[in-house]
Length: 389
Ligand code: RFL
Ligand code: PHB
Image (cartoon, rainbow, N blue to C red; front, side, top):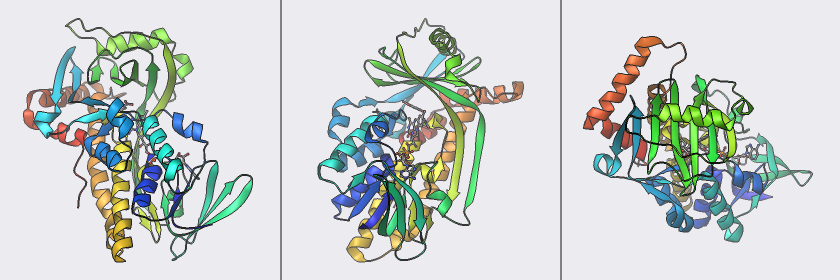
C-alpha cells in the first residue's frame, strides 16, 4: 500500500487532517488501532472554541454541530458560595460551543467513510521505519496480517500512548503530574445551569458541564489512585452539592448516573513536533489538564496548521510551512499550557498546600471577579487564541 500522507490515529486530530487533505486533493490513509464503535464512544471533551467550530464547519462537518451544539456566552466562576459570570462576547468578542467529542468523531468518520480516503479500523501501527528519509514506512497489523504503508510523509496523531512520539530521537520533554484527578460522570438529568460552572468548593474543585438539554456532565476533584467503584452515586451527588453550594439557594438536580471514570491530571510537551518526515499533532505531542478545556481545541489547531502546510506544499512545492509547523504550534501550545496550569492550580485544593496557597488562590479568583482586565485575559484564552499566520 502506498500513499502521500500516512496518518496514525483516527481521533479528532487524525480524522480532521484526513478531511482537510482530501478537500485539497491530497492522498492519505488513516490507520486506527481500535474499532469504530470504541472510537465513537470514548467519553472525553465537550467544549469547543469558536475557531474549532469554524474549522469543522469549513470542512463539511458542521451540520449536526450547528443543529445540536449549545452556544455559550460565558462561564460561571463559583467560590465563597457566590457566583461570578465571565461574559465572553463583551470581554473577548467570541463565544464557545458545547458539542461532545464523541459526536465530532462520529461526524468525521461518517464523512470519511462516505467519500473520503481510506480509514482502516483495527489497524494498529507498531513501527515507523526511516522517518528521517524521503520515503518513510508505517508497519501495522490489520485483519491478522502484518502490512506496510509506504508514505511520503507520516503524521503521528495517535494520542498520548501512541508510537509516534517515541520514534523521534533527542526530544526535549517537559511536564508535571498534578496531585489530584477528576472523577467524571454522565447523568440523565437536565443541566442545572445555562453555562458551565467552575467551582472552588471548600474541600476541592467541581465542574458542571453538559452534553445536551437532557444530559449533564459533571466532574469532581478526587485524590490520585481513586477507584470510581468507591464512589456510590449518593456520595457523588452529596459531594457535588457541597462544592457547588451558594448562599442564594441554587439547587443541583440529580438523576441516574450512566457513566463514571477517573482521569489523572497532567501537563506534558515534547519539542520539536517534527523529525524528518514525521510530524506530530494533538495529544501525541502535548497534554494539558482539562480545567481549561483545551486538549481537543489544541489538537484541532495543530491540524489546521498542518493541513495548511501540506496544501502549500502541494500547490507550490515549498516545504516552508512544514518547516515552521513545529515552532508555530509550540508557541501556541506553551500559551495554552500556561493557561491550563493557571486554571488548574487556581481552582483545585492543593494537597498539603496550606493556608498561604489557599489565600493566593482566593486572591486570584477575586481579581478575575473584580477586574475586567483580569477577566478579559481569562476570556481571551478560554475562547481561543487566533491561529497564527
Ligand atoms: P486521541 O483522541 O487520543 O486519538 C488518538 C487515536 O490514535 C489511536 N491510536 C493508534 N492508532 C493506530 N496505531 C497505533 N499504534 C495507535 N495508538 C493510538 C487511538 O486509538 C485514538 O483513536 O488524540 P487526538 O486526536 O490528538 O485528540 C485529542 C483529544 O482527544 C484530547 O485532547 C481531549 O479529549 C482532551 N479533553 C478536552 N479537550 C478540550 O478541548 N475540551 C474539553 O472540554 C476536554 N475535556 C478532555 C476533556 C480529556 C479528558 N480525558 C478523558 C483525558 C475531559 C476529559 C475527562
Ligand atoms: C466537558 O464538557 O467534558 C468539559 C468541559 C469543560 C472542561 C472540561 C471538560 O474544562
